[in-house]
Length: 116
Length: 113
Image (cartoon, rainbow over all chains, first blue to last red; front, side, top):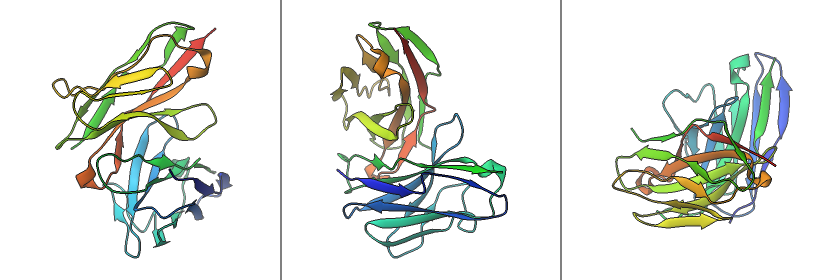
């Protein structure tokens, strides 16, 4: 299993500013992901955080808007840049301890972001 | 591309009623299938999973069977409790795709005493 600490748990931000969300795992994990859950909707994958290299972004998400770092196997950050009210969502860090078919993804508690 | 479709909610039930949430999927390979649950005010957590055809995942009285022939993974519980009130998400992952999850839209379930 994996225990994930995600900070901050919530924030209210002014439009045009940026917020960096941190994800710390209690053990080394192979895969780390960032998801977005817009109000009343399902989870959408933003990107896969790759250790020591650039993140892999899903269609519709770009590095300039959502820069991601992953300096080691237990830590990652997601920055939401130049925020607008449309960025108001819950952002979730997820980890998969090892590759393969019989694996489980663990989720952080999420960061509830409100942009005003 | 890969996708998951699940029945829309909200689903409102009385305690001890039978619950079914339908889930079907489209995938390019042979996915693992999951049900995740999000209780009010809590994070997302795994409820059950199945990794190959005909596998049955079970947990907390919930069950789901991986049906390859109908590309389905319906969630069932024979007698729900008020504490089962939550949002349920069906999801798939493909190991070849790096284990990233594709989620269905979520189904909100409300169980009344």
